[in-house]
Image (tube, rainbow, N blue to C red; front, side):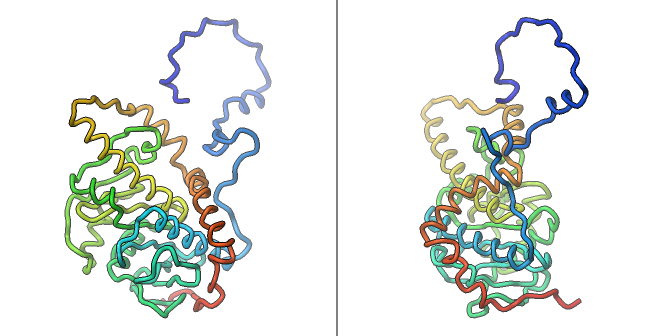
Length: 315
C-alpha cells in the first residue's frame, strides 16, 4: 500500500529493545517488486540462458507469442504494425516480422534479421521483405537508446488511434495506468506514412530518453522495453488506457467529476510495478496462453532451425 493511503493515527508505544545490526538491516531492506507481489515463493523475473542460441530462440518464440496476443487483441490493420527485438549476441542487429504475414500466424521461423545502422537484411527468413516504414521507425529508436531498449512495439490499434487525435497525454485514471506515470510522450505531429528517415528520427526524439511509450498523433501507439514481453504488455496496457480515457471523457462531458490518482500515489505505483522483471512477469499469462493455444512452445519455435545464421556485421 502506498504511504499516503494510511490515514489512521497510531498511539505511541515504548521503543523496542535494540536488535543486532544484521537483523535491523534485514528488516529495513526494501522488497523488489516481484518479492512484494509474491505471497510465498517469489515469481521469477527475466530468465538467463546458457548459450546465445538458446536466448535467441526464447526471444523469437516470445516475440511470436506477443504477435499472437496482438492478433487476439485486434491490433491488426492490413500490413501495418511491427515489433523489433535486438539480437542477444549482436546488439547492432535486430529481428523484425515480415511484411504482410498475419500476426496470428507468425512463428520464430518467420522473423527477419536486419542491421540497425544500414537496414541490410543479414539473416533470418529472407523469403519475405521487412516493412520499410517499420525499419525507419525502429532503427531510429534503437539508435537513440542503445542501452535500455531491447524491444519496440508499434501498431495501429483502434483505441490508440482514436485517442491520438487529441494529441494529449493520458491521465492517471487508475493504478494500472500508473505504469506510464511521467513515462509516456505525445508526438503531436503527423508526417504521413514513414518513408523517410527524418520522420523516424522525430518519433524517436519525441519518445525521449526515458519514456516507455508514445502516442503518435493520427497514427497509433509505440512502446518499448528491455524484453519483448515488457514492450508487448505495455502496448496492450497503453491501448486499454486510451480506451478508458475515451470512456472517461465521454462521462465527464455529461458533468461527472474525475478523481485522479495523485502524483505521489502514481509515483509510488510506478516505482513498485513498472520495473523490467515485474513487467516481464506481467506479460507471461498472455504469453503462456498463446503458447498453450498454439500447441506448445515447439509450435511457435517452428522454423527456427532453418533461419539463415547471423553474425557480427562487417566493420
